[in-house]
Image (tube, rainbow, N blue to C red; front, side, top):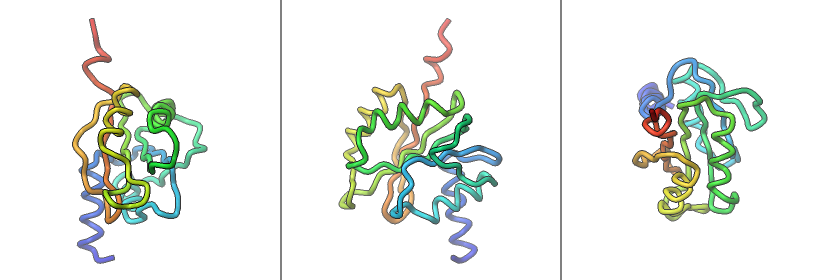
Length: 143
């Protein structure tokens, strides 16, 4: 990969909200994931991604999810369980027309049910689209 392409991938990871020294847990890893994006996240954070067996609190979660991976709401609730309060989930699903494509309405419904708010989707590689999900800040601080 060229230095320019490497820089662009790292910038994507930063735009997706990854910051230096974050612990990022990766869930749903399989042979179809985007290796360049994974490397960009590691470059942006300066740390290696931790896997599904990590048993401490993570600052953020990268969740690779395909249509046949089960229930998306359950996957999001599970991802929240080991995440630092105020952390974000980067939900990565296959782009339209790819195997495992997940309807945007299904993502929105699952995020809402899991108590997460969704920002706009962003292209996250050749085959993946990313949705940044976060816990609502205002709801957490009621009087």
